[in-house]
Image 1: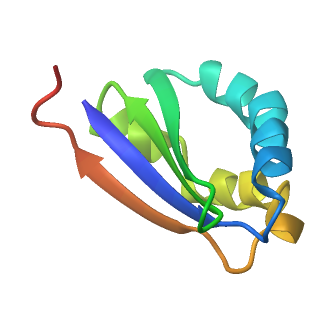
Image 2: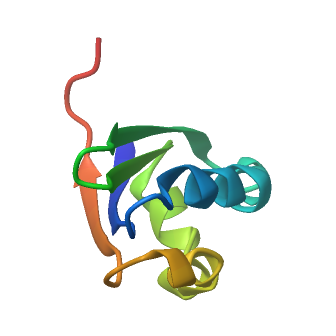
Image 3: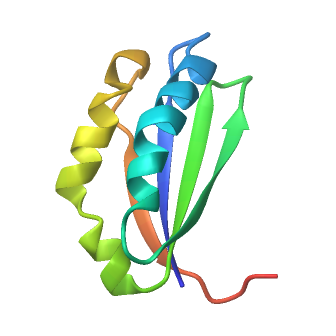
Length: 96
């Protein structure tokens, strides 16, 4: 299994609004992609930081979800962010 980790730095007071937009627009799109295995968000409200993690069945599925599509998805919340999101991809070796 593979994971994409995206770190968002939101403006103060914009975390919930940004998450609502992502849940309403991005998550349904992700569910339609081959190999998508789910997602979770880690939220630090004190620093307005959100770490979004998506899980993928294979490296090929992760790659097929595409960086070009990520830019389109980020645009939906760009006005709420203080900086461009960072993106990292990982292989999941242990999961309980």
